[in-house]
Image 1 (cartoon, one colour):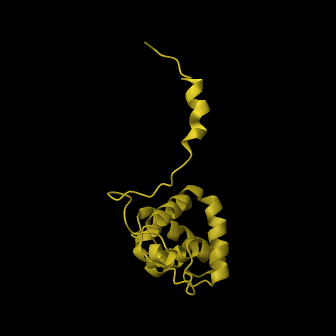
Image 2 (cartoon, one colour):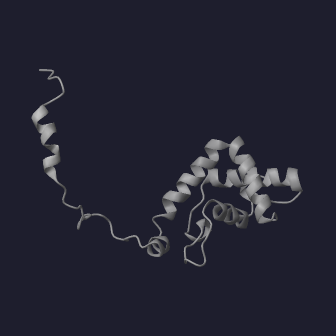
Image 3 (tube, one colour):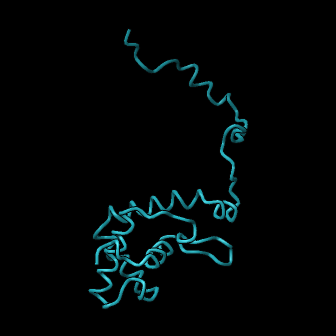
Length: 140
């Protein structure tokens, strides 16, 4: 089986292992935010499917939750870069999704044109830095 023949429901199971849903808090899991898998995501799932077949003679999707976690843990160590890339892309997408931001109480607006509120600070704390003068060498 090549990665193009891998079951998309298996990918949903993988994404929910990386970012599990929290029904009580109304926070969606990794599979519920419209993540568009790339070739690396499918290949990562194929790695898990192959390992599940070798270990349990089942696909990754057919495994129970604990066995999925064990397979993921084992293969994540062997294929570190692939799984780090998948997790990074998923997390970037996840925290930009409207439902996630609303559930976490995060603003959905961009920082501009209104800008982000920055609290006033005590600029007198920088006085010693100003008195010290430049600490770099001019290259004139």
